[in-house]
Image 1 (tube, rainbow over the protein chains, first blue to last red):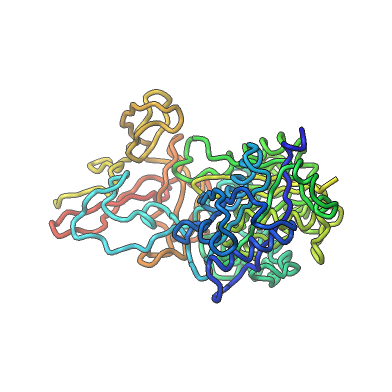
Image 2 (cartoon, each protein chain N blue to C red; image 1 turned 180 degrees about the vertical axis):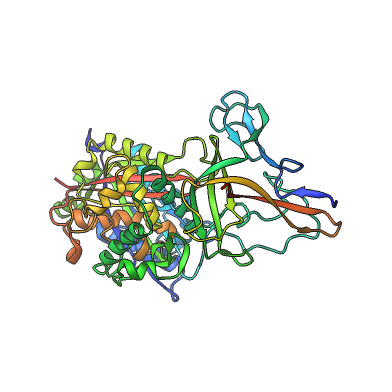
Length: 400
Length: 131
């Protein structure tokens, strides 16, 4: 592969995740962009394309951000892809660099979500005075709660339970222990929204949302942003030794959607598209799961983390419960997963998540992870999934 | 007896209530919504087929927190009806982990949802324990 074809992350930044009542979407996005540019030692004058992700802000975030950080006339791609929005923005910038249209691209994801409550379940209105069929199911009344659940905690609870049904070994306590691990990890991450350790007992006895997911087992709605500057290897060679040393190689950048399978339109299948993305990523990077030093995966709910051990092929097929129980995914284990605290404690400002997980991996590959550094980390994987569905997988490698 | 209307058009009422699916005539993929084409093979012809009224719970959750206006707790499940997956509530049993389990056998059941100003009764469906 020629230097022109190589993709590198030059600069990357994430804001503190949490409640930011004094900052609007633009403030948070600007903070991430300026942080990423400063981290990479470049300015907006160097950037050839901007991909901007936001899901719930009303559209056009890229241009709003340009108006504060620099209107240089470059193309903006505003992207939205559910919880994979951040990864989609990054992938968009990477595709522009890979295509040779620009040398340097910028991706940002930003969301204001503090206090948003349950996602994807609409309030139920009063039934109408006359039963009148409407919509693609000819429904005479709202079906959420009458024909299953549309809310995310319930959908992902079923996804975890389905895995348990198929392979065994997954129960309420196991899912709580996965959450216990991530909350423990968060105590070392000052940028996480919640940094309190919780025991499995405390987690199981907390407020039930959708069995087996209690409140601490659900991703935390919060505000936050993350941004990354990407460039090709040829351009990187023209920069300083310091910039080259800190750059992180993107050895795979993959985005997939869910192929049709029986049941996938009844309960979203988050498994096959993740497995497909992982397979493609390992092949593109020329590495296997056994080469990974850390993984940030999309634990939007404790029940989701379990199935993704399997989908990312970190364990044998069907072996996710045993894999977790062996302790390997704790930060002192062989393959630490979600040392950031994961979405359950770090928080999940939707469009920021798919870049923030890459920031986390970069910290370790640059030996800049401070108190939560995974020593000697050379290869890491970041995974997100957006229901509907879209899956992003990036494999990152330390500069040689 | 008052006029009845099903909650959704894939619920067929009468002496033996059952669900119907739109089945792709080319590849056999089944759907419950109005179709433009088949997501599996891109075919555009469908036939209406009956779905087995008995099945097995393949996945479930007990929803304790939902959007305003929705009664909780309730059990949401995916039921494997002889190879066709159906989304439905598990009804006529207490909504707790002692009464709902993975693999439990269930059968289709209907219930009245109330009448509208014309006196028409809407009928919903769920799956109840089969034993």
